[in-house]
Amino acid sequence: MITLAIDIGNTRTKAAVFIQNELMVEEYIHHPNDLHLLIQTQQPKHAVMCAVGDGADELAEVILKHQIPLLRVNYKTEFPFVSQYKTPQTLGMDRVSGIAAAQYLFPQTNCLVIDAGTCITYDFLSKNHQYTGGAISPGLQMRLRAMHEFTHKLPYPELIWPEDFEGQITNDALLSGVCFGVADEINGKIERYTQRYGTLQVLLCGGNTSMLAKHIKNNIFAVPSLVLLGLNQILLFHVNKG
Image (cartoon, rainbow, N blue to C red; front, side):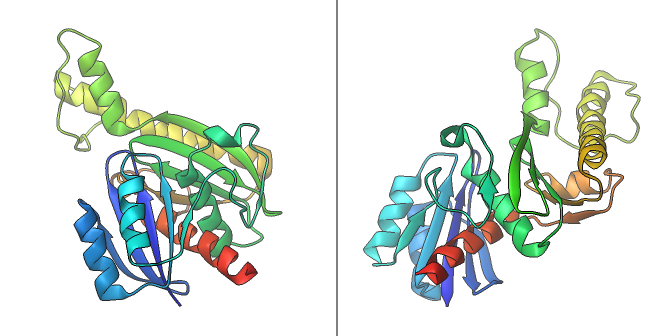
């Protein structure tokens, strides 16, 4: 079965085509016509979508024009795990999708999913398939922008990893504070979860995956397409359930 998954994020929209569990095509969607062309060429039979950004209705209209059944994931959607989140209506469905992917990739394993995008999210799934919640903090670009916009004189440097944690000029000092600060935060979070739950698998995804992966001490599994993979798992769960 050919399926289509769409992840509408805060800064960009990605789509992927799967045959069962295998990712065949992945691309960015800049305009509804991009999605129209992808559907024409790949001919998916089912589609799934989650959105934390804008544009969901436009893309949903394209899918429905092609007469493809669409699952729009929201807090009322049934998931293949148990959620203990106390305010499900405020929970980002990208976070839930990452958890669904972790469950598929590492069943019966404690998993910590870290999504390093516009924001950095931390979400935990126990080996007993209990989603317990997590944390949200500002992403790399957001931290740099905040220091620039909330001060009078601090610049807004290009995001590159600094050569040393001690900055000799202001741009490097900003980059050091942000980049090494985030790396220390991630390593600290992993340590906290390990102390509470014991052995766990760490999964890293999001736009800054490649930049951060080499600075995380623990053994991680980097999956840039984790949210799309999880969306596909949620869709297959519903399709197979009938």
